[in-house]
Amino acid sequence: MRLSALRSSRIALHNPRLRASVSAHQDSDVFANNLRKTLDAHRTSNRNRLIRKVYPRPLPAALWRPEIPLESRPECPPATPPASTLKETKPKETTSRQRRRLRHEDAATRSTQSRPADTLIRSSGTFHDENAGSYPWTSFLELSDGIDDATAFLNAEILALERYLTPSSPEQIWTDQLSAHVIDSLNPIVPHTPQLIGFRHIGLALPHSDLNFLLPFEDPLRSPDRARKPSATRPQIHDAHLRLLRQVESTLENSPPFDRIQLSGKRRPVLEARHQPTGLLLRFHCGEKAPAIMDYLESCLDQYPTLRPLYMATRALLEARGLSQSLQSGIRPDALAMLLVTFLKLNHDRFSVPFNTGEQFMKFLKFYGTDVDLQSIGVAVDPPGFFGSEKIQEFREGNTNTACLRGQRSLINAKRTAVSRGNMPAGQRLCIQDPTHYMNDLGRSFTRTAELQNVFSTAYEQLCDYSQNWKNTSRVNSILASALRANFDQLETLREKLVPSD
Image (cartoon, rainbow, N blue to C red; front, side, top):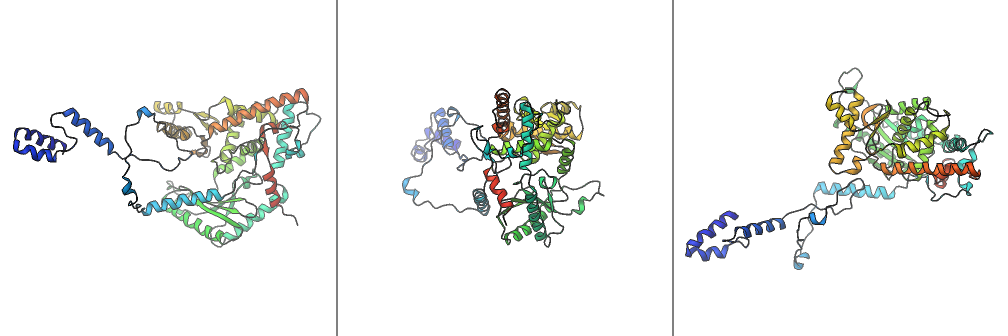
């Protein structure tokens, strides 16, 4: 169109009769005798007509976009409509897909705002050693005459914290009754009896840990007799799981003790419900059987007796900093446990005292706080070790071909791809290879890796400082409290609800 107008204007120069008609219809950005000026006018016109995508909503925490310098941004004056047409503009009708998305966002916002904070162990701010009454685990201390150094005293404190955070007999009886009540309520509507799984089942739960239930679902096409099995997450099974979870959701909605019922998850749907009297969270999953990683972790508890107290101390430390599994996208319990298992495997028979949890806890904090960079490497549990970009080079050279190494290559490639696309939080997320499923990343949902390492390194420095004070003055009432700096008041309130007075 532009070239034809320019051509007609040139013809008009040789034909006087056409000059008047062409000049009347000549485009404003076409100049007959100046090609450069015409091209510049076309560029400006096209630039002003560009439509750019904007993001009116605030960006999610997990999304990162690079900042474009002002000198690199194209000059595009904002197109402001005349004031007279602003009042006459009618709002556009939203499509059905947009309406569904808006309803989903509104529901997610309401559920996030209405759900109480899951972190019952909260930060106490500064550390005051003279306020020993705020350290409830000290009442479980069992001091012996052999405690003559800070490491032995810290070991006694960690074991006391484990006893304090372990559900008491009345609390365990009450949660067992709650589990039995849920299973009895769902038995008439589910094809198979629900099962209690997770940390509550293997005995690694805190008093406020979630209750996870598995709704067994048979998949005939994935029978053990078949050599080649279809995917467990194919659309047909996914829809069947959704239908079963919606039936459970309808049952729970008609049960007074449960509220804030929410169905979430795209690939693997999960139903959550809050037990109103106590605030405990219940989760319902569908699957053929319980996750294999729970059996693996249970065997690790038998192999490493210090795993349980170390997990309790680390979990309390992270929950007080808002880094445990909660609304702040914290680390999952199984991922945290696998970090500890890897550390214990790598340091097998390297401790001066095999069962000294104080020494192991400080070395664990230093190891993951300063010795390794968890943002750029992956953690392998079995066999224990770390993997990074060298795995990709090994595969290019054809030196390795095992399932474990193929999984490590896939996991580290996912991190590299995220970095190349500018998604730095995903590229620096925690990466832990599942020892029972090499292609599964247990730390995929945790993107606050730098905060995690900073908490570990800071806690290690604080323990070192107060251990030195304990040696010099023997006036430090608690070494562990200097690193935890946790407030257990909300946890005590929950425990009172779990054991109602007669």
